[in-house]
Image (cartoon, rainbow, N blue to C red; front, side, top):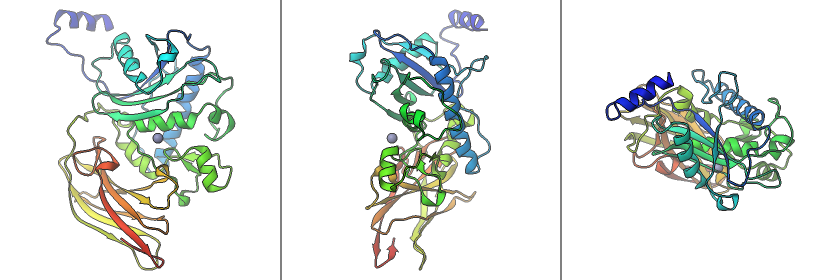
Length: 363
Ligand SMILES: [Zn+2]
């Protein structure tokens, strides 16, 4: 099949372009020139992918999302598909997240992926056995190259049990939460803090295990996917099995009748409004940036459905007793996130300050 396609491409190069493929996670194991590929990497990465897939699936199901596909690729034998990429420099050269440019470009050439459309690149960098460790963990969405995330590959002994919590010993040693967190940024998730009412411990897009435990004053091991993160993921092309059609232009929402209220006697705020757009808006998101939250990782974020007529209502159920601001933005059917049609994500949202006086919220 491949031979036929190649022949076609060679015969008619100006006329035939490879069609964009569905957006999926493309996993790269990257090694510098002076580091050999680690023993046992296939088995370890199989375990990482299985764990991550199950983490996201359970989170989506918990919040009522039923129509989604796995964004991960497997071979016919059932192994996680791994793109082995050798760098052009020794390990001392690779010091930051720009390693992704070389890793993605080499993978695209080596595996003929130049024309497959936007993908989510999960780049694991291996620079030697522990204590050697690639220290950079980053991830984001780039409308030119797709989602990307960079993390360390840890070769230590052990098997990840699918029943392990992310805060258990081996997952913690492997920094598995950070790996899946950065992949979350690759899926365009922002930082989202845990909510007490969820009773599930720390959130994937929240603080580190250590930071969470310090603030919570316990030894919590559990990590979960928040409702807002699940809403965002449910529209991502990789979870819909779709081609990523997001480009440099964004949907341009028009927002009317935006109101903020605080029901008397309840420690809550309610955001209501109506949004219209040429691309169907799916969820309204409200981030609550409280002046007393321990850091940006703790930003509680709420999601609400958008009705056919564009109306929505989102309840901020756990505001801290302090001043703060609410930020409203939207997730669209094509996976785009914007509030103003000019920028992506939370920073494009509509901001609204509130005050907390004498035990009452004044939005
Ligand atoms: Zn992060």
